[in-house]
Length: 200
Image (cartoon, rainbow, N blue to C red):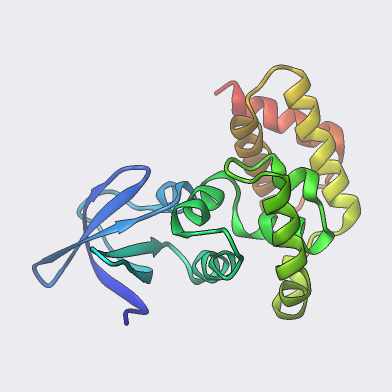
């Protein structure tokens, strides 16, 4: 029904926003990934949407970019994953990382995501691996060597006592910084930058 909505952001919190579109306030459920990218309240923006009809209501889910929206729709195609679980999954990991875990068949990494148990992880791999491999641009797929470095850094942070979600977020920020600066990716540099992020 709606591909996206364009309007003024009048309210935001980590789970939902209200977007004023020509005087009508639309409440949309969002993930933490989208929340972290949102501009300040009163800013105008485009939010990509998925409409979920229910017997007693209609719910709108909003996404900052089309990539996350497409991953949300892929998750909904899996037996046992509804919109709330899909929203929770995309709050614990960004679409690129999720895509790579599924393509690589990394069920261990998938079970570290809040809301994903062993059976759900196996279904995600079984039902989406081939599909995502075909439709994902080559630049979106992380090499196994890079993924191994990422996982080693993540495990190091867990060993140091950091919570899973905080460790994931710190690794993500560190990787973004390394990529932005065109730095060489190695385990020492990644852990160093992740710890710096955690100690802010």
